[in-house]
Image 1 (cartoon, rainbow, N blue to C red):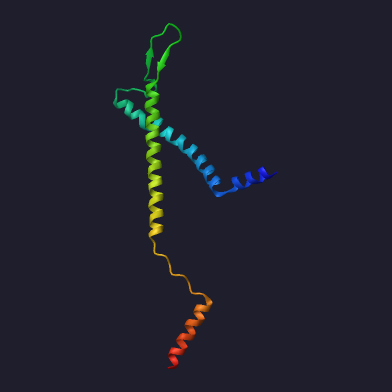
Image 2: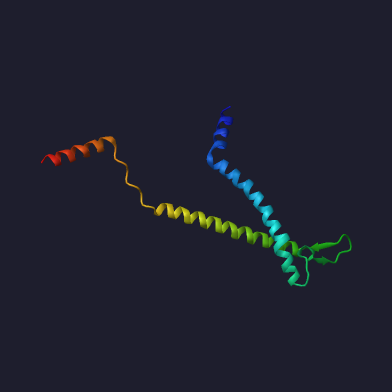
Length: 131
């Protein structure tokens, strides 16, 4: 029972929930990036390079048995995916860091006086005015 209680406390912490949300959003983001690369970026590049479809770029290895291929076109697609994801993540982290710096640079508001301090200020002002 103690282990279940500890696990529940761990799982309910904000960091774990934030991480889970980040993973789900990241998984959805990956499918968007893959579609961007596969359906929008690589077709024009392949067209410019002579109507080449990257997924068809392979090197056939001479063997006596089953054919063996090196699929370097798929590697090119994966590299483009990585570059886009890395660039977007860099921009997100950079923006978050910039916002955090701005928040730290804001001057701290002076603390609001307590009721006692307000009362003492009023008394001081009254005594000043009597003289």
